[in-house]
Amino acid sequence: MIDFSVPASVTALAEEIRQFVTEEIIPFETDPRLTAHGPSDELRQELVELARKRGLLTFQAPTRHGGREPSHVDQAVLYEAAGWSTLGPVALNCAAPDEGNMFLLNKIANDEQSAKFLEPVIAGHQRSVFAMTEPGGAGSDPGQLKTTATFDGTTYTINGTKWLITGATGAQVWIIMADVQENDHGPSGATLFLCEGDTPGISIDRVMSTMDRNYVEGHGVVTFTDLRLPASSLLGEVGSAFRYAQLRLAPARLTHCMRWLGAAARAQSIAVEYAQTRTAFGKPIGEHQGVGFMLADNEIALQQCRLAIWWACWTLDQGQRGRHESSMVKALVSEELFKVADRCVQVLGGIGISDETPIGMIFSDIRGFRLYDGPTEVHKYAIARQILRTERQRS
Ligand SMILES: Cc1cc2nc3c(=O)[nH]c(=O)nc-3n(C[C@H](O)[C@H](O)[C@H](O)COP(=O)(O)OP(=O)(O)OC[C@H]3O[C@@H](n4cnc5c(N)ncnc54)[C@H](O)[C@@H]3O)c2cc1C
Image 1 (cartoon, rainbow, N blue to C red):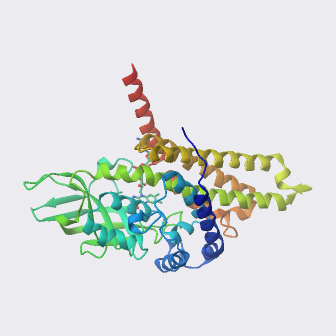
Image 2: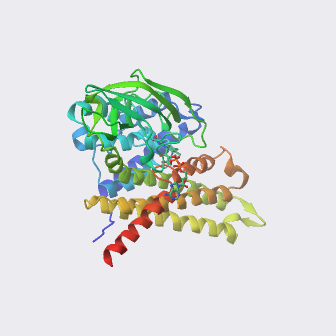
Image 3: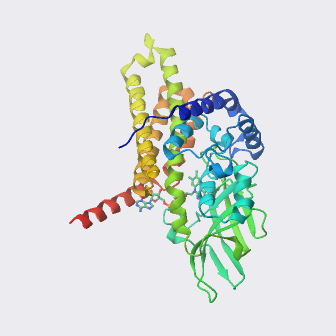
């Protein structure tokens, strides 16, 4: 039976996180180091130190790595609190892509790789990237992977171009997806590699100009030119990249939902305050039905999204893969929260699109969420296939 009563310890931690974000992190939302390409790494480091002082840094890490290892449902409550500011997850070290990468490394990195690559990220000293998407290659369909890795028996040589690689500039921990070509020495197929960001052969060509600015150092275009890696750089088994990526995707897409839920709830709280204090045609605008309905639609959507996230988390906590459930929830939440943010802009009138409040930034930042970790249409495509498969098995 589903029981969504939140343990007192989780409520207390969520309150602590919310207070930390409100008191210590929100003031940085107007810091010039929050640039068009996201927070600079210098700003990130300063925020991380604040969270460290409060004993809240990387709270989601496994206990064996010094974290609190909350269940997925508990994470839903905690990440929502962290997301109250888009800088909250950056400070707490539970932002993408590091959070998903830590999850993946914790599952498949060997002890040596964990010590070298995972622990510095958990400690907030280094950042990580996940390099999959390619111009004209891997994207909605990762099977179109074009980056190649040739193997001569001792060394893999990687060549290819990636784009939209979040946080590439300055990241020291790189997870790279490449297609190991058929060879005489071992297996082939889509594979994950793990290496340092300053390995010769990795070049960051440029940082893309994008609508969002909540991800540290923005999104890079990256070229791999004869990037030579030893066999010890394999992350898991050759040919298993898609399986591992799926392992990361279900929980990672849910944590995106949780963080954005926090940000959308903040936008709603600002819109509600504005609707109570701003007057037009003789009364507060919130008392005009057109505005009241927008606030009501937001409240309904926020609670619907919250419960949907908790439900998908609950399936993961039961030991299920939650692939279908997380797909449904990601499609629902990304679409609904975007509408919430849009209605908040509308309630605020002209200042809604400005930087006078965080609503403008939340609106433009949340847009990308309908695309990454699977565009809505791709989730619907997967859900439809699952429905048809189940129906076929029944008949
Ligand atoms: C803010 C942001 C951060 C990102 N960070 C990273 C990162 O760190 N690392 C990384 O590797 N990638 C990253 N990405 C890339 C992201 O994973 C891709 O954008 C996503 O997988 C979609 O691939 P694509 O952009 O190539 O779109 P395409 O594959 O070109 O798809 C375009 C559109 O086609 C439609 N479509 C595709 N397939 C179907 C289908 N089966 N049915 C119906 N419609 C369909 C969808 O509407 C889709 O939006 C990021 C993207 C964004 C926006």
